[in-house]
Image 1 (cartoon, rainbow, N blue to C red):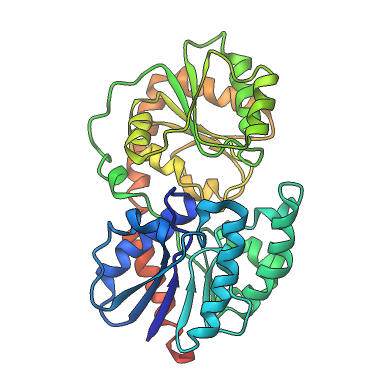
Image 2: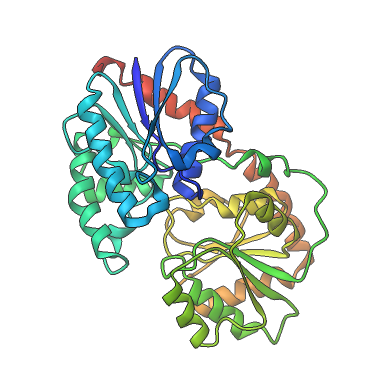
Amino acid sequence: MKILINATNIGRQLSGLSVYTLSLLKELVKLDKENEYLIVVNKTSLENISEIDFPVNFRLKLTGRYISSDYGTRGHFLRFLYANYLALIYRRYLIFTSSQLEAVVVPARQIIVIQDVIHLMDKSFNKKQYIYFKYVLKIAAKRALKIIVPSQFTKTQILKYYNTADDKVIVTHLGIQQLFKEQIGKDGAKKEKYILYVGRIAETKNTGNLLEAFRSIKDKIDYKLVVAGNGNKRFIDELKYKGLINNRVELRSDLKIQNLLELYKKAALFVFPSLYEGFGLPPLEAMACGCPVVVSNTTSLPEVCGDAAVYVDPTDIKSIADGILKVLGDDKLREEMVKKGYLWAKGFTWEKTARETLAVINSTKNNY
């Protein structure tokens, strides 16, 4: 079978979507020696894609640098147009769309990966994305042979908003990267006096409530808060204006994997009070690095974190604050959480994700 994987979401800067695509490719090349693959990448991805040793049944097709997530809204729009162009040109191929932003709406044999549908749940976050998800992605989802999602929660949302058949939507959990996996069970680094958050600084990630919660307890604890992530400058300036970003809060934008690894290993506690997650990898990465985790009790996070986390109500500032104090104030609880976290994180591997994805690909052979 001939398969075209649209990997144009991999750019110079890695995002959650591009980490998914890159990690999946790294495992697929080891697993599948039978199908023929055409991997479409852009020029900005070459440094990241060069990490993969492609066998003879995997060919690369290089496209322009602007068809890339590195170029924001313009890049996303060009990727969408190019994805549909590819579907028209490569009609004999099964199109594997590795994120929702390259959805194919022209008639084609397609498997589409949808990581989340947050923009359907609250259109105030981004009205353009709401229109795209409500009308454009709905067409692609209706025409797709299969839809792959990262959690049972996301599947329920797809069924709700797109009214598609249950057996058409397949859950394949994500994995944690090899460098994080290698930390499982290792003697932990000496913990430092900081609480860690990793992710975008954004309303959907509930960064404001986290900062409010920290401000409400900062005089009770001898810890600082490290916020590792990027975000909209206007939103960050608003947080600063409110006094939520101060000398006890450190912003870090150096998100290279080695830097993240050190942050996770040395943190006393990881807090992730996100309002919405289609999956949510950072809590699992923290667990693998021996860091106890406090997360939201909503959307996919209970499914992803199991009994290895302390749960809080992300809409309640006091609940977030109480969760932080609960873990920091109980040495025995922290030790138990670290042990549970190690065991839980072991179950999430990209090799497993790739095997399950390959099974979905092969299940469409009758439609070839």
